[in-house]
Amino acid sequence: MVIPAAAEIRAVEDYWNQRPCNIRHSPKAVGTREYFDEVEWRKYFVEPHIPAFAQFERWRGKRVLEIGCGIGTDSINFARSGADLTIVELSENSLELTKQRFDVFGQDARFIHGNAEEVDRLIPEGEKFDLIYSFGVIHHTPDPRRVVEAARRLMEPHSELRLMVYNRWSWKVLWIYLAYGLSNLSRLRGLVARYSEAQTGCPITYVYSDADARQLVAGFDVLGMWNDHIFPYEIEPYKRYEYRKTWYFRALPDRVFQWLSHAAGWHKMIVARPAPSPAGV
Ligand SMILES: C[S@@+](CC[C@H](N)C(=O)[O-])C[C@H]1O[C@@H](n2cnc3c(N)ncnc32)[C@H](O)[C@@H]1O
Image (cartoon, rainbow, N blue to C red; front, side):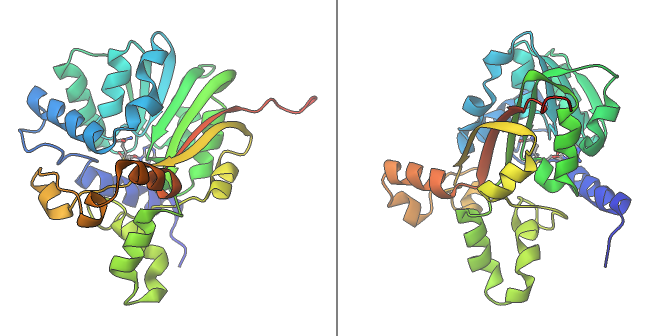
C-alpha cells in the first residue's frame, strides 16, 4: 500500500509531538531551568561525541540553520556560543519546549515550524547559511534526499553541512534483530523503525551504509564521514537515571569499546561542503 506523502509526514509529526525527543532526560518539572540543565547533562553524558561534532564555539557570529532541534539541547549551545541561529522543526510541541528553554536562559533564535523537506521555501529568499546542522533528524522524514537538496540551495561554496544519520552496519541494528527479529524474519525491515527510539513505533527510520550516505549527500564534497556511539547501559536502570553498563561492555577495555564504536556505532557523522558546479551548469 502506498501511503500519501501528506499522511506520512503527519504521522512523523504526531509521533514527535506525543513524545518530544529526550523529554524524559530529567525527572524534574518540564520547562524549568533545573530540568533543562539535567537534560543537557544526560544528553552529553550518554552522547559525549556531540559537542566535538557540532563545534559550537566555531560558529560565533556565523549564520547557523539547525534542522530538527528536538527540545533544543544543541540549539541552546549554538546560541550560547554566539551563533546567529535559525531553527526549523516539524513538531510544534518540541519547538515550543525549545522556545521555553531559550526564554529560561535568555537566549535568542529564529524559530520556524515546518517540514525540512521544503526548508528553502520556509526561509526568506536569498538568505544563506554558513552551517547547516542536523543531528539524528533526516532519517525520520519520508524523503531525506529532499532535505539535502533543499539545504543545498541555502548554502554558499564555503558553507558546511554537518549531518548525523543512523548507521546500517551497527551494533544497534544487530541488537534489534537479535532481540526482536529472530521470531519473525519477514518483519525485519519494519523492526528498526519500531525500536530505533526511546518510544517504540517511530513511523520512519532509515539506516545508511557509507555508500548510501554518499548518495544521500550527492552534489557535496564529503570532508569527513565516520561512525560513533554505542549505548552501553542497561535499559531498566537507565530509565531510573542509573548508569550501569551491560556486563559485556563492562568487560571490554575502553580502547576496544572505542574501536567498536567507530567500527559499528549507531551514529554516522557526515561533514560535507557543496561541490562546485561543473563549468557552464
Ligand atoms: C531524534 S530527534 C533529534 C532531535 C535533536 N536533533 C537532538 O539531537 O536531540 C528527531 C527530530 O527531528 C524532527 N523532524 C523529523 N522530521 C522532520 C522534518 N521533516 N522537518 C523538520 N524536523 C523533523 C522531529 O520532530 C524530532 O524533533
